Length: 135
Image 1: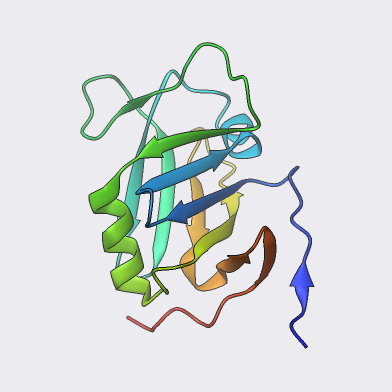
Image 2: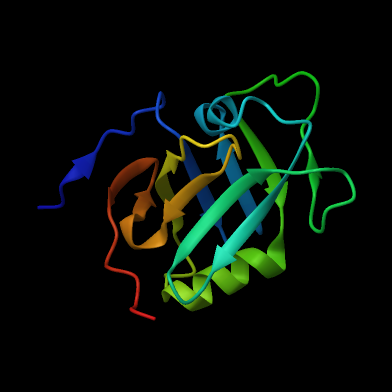
């Protein structure tokens, strides 16, 4: 019997979906970053760590956060980056993955996600993923 997990939406989180090429940044992640005007993604394939960090408009890969969020999350299409994450982690292409995040206490606003802690989403229900392959 599969054991499903309930997601805590008060904690930072992010999800990846390869079919749509979408990265979903949850509102709690944006709150932890203090709703920056611009942010970008960081990825360390060697450590299987993914990050979201406030940045400036002229920084590489910057994304603008809308002034008003109408939902509990913000979606960004980044097909190449999503494909790289899936390939690096050895994730199944038919699944969406959700990862809890940790905000660092410094002033950078950086929120990091250990991709080894990913959860698989099955028909709207979440369970622990098979471990991401070691780098």
